[in-house]
Length: 330
Image (tube, rainbow, N blue to C red; front, side, top):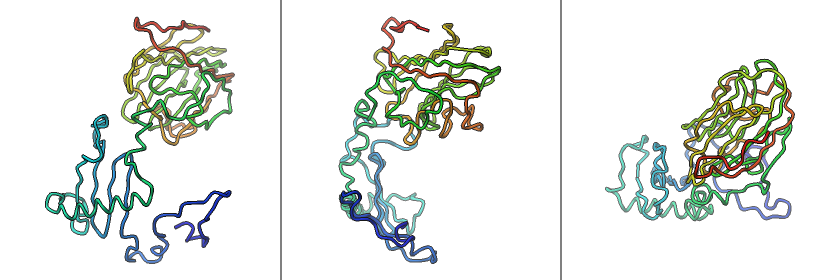
């Protein structure tokens, strides 16, 4: 549609690499004719195994491995795409998809399923659900940096999550922040992710906070009991996963200032894979959507003190006895 609107043709090759032809139909013909007859009579979709197809007023689809209203994994562990139950709707008469006709019209359903296979094959969709391979079944194979420790400085932001320290399930970290705090210091010290999931450490009115957001639903926060005094400070944020946390497993989140513990709590659910598909790792600011709703209205919530450095290091998980294998070192 964009190529058509600006009057250019799609490139056949880019930097010497042949390009696959674009699928679909330009929508330009509708710009000046809202009642124009549709020219694309068939359209498929597939997202993480959830899939469907539209053709000439009919729609057939299946939820795949997850029911959209369920917060848990539903039946991801036992999912077999060939056993998915499909639904069938006549959108010309039932736009809200209230009357499933699959049992009454098995022939029409089979026709629509065949259309899905045709459209999906043309657009290189198969194997169905392949996007779940790393996201759910093998998060250990997701792209990640080979580094095990990082030293960051103010001005470093918009770092891709895959190039930054990981705070997702199984990646225990200790972060040491050296800063000079003003009275009633406020602002983000570091963060990764966004509203859809992430981890942030920040000050608000002098009080130190760390919050872990496992999707939009589960949020876990630890705070200091009092405001930190003005002046130089060494702040430690430790996220230590249990030795065998399992998928989305728990961790202990603790805070210390100048070697003195000031807060501790549990993160009962964590992100297995990426925290947010489009957010980044930021120092001294939250550049995307807010990880914590506490400062959403004040984005980018830039730290107002003097941030010297943020040092992040992977550390061993919690031992079976419940003691962190590395003592605090300030």
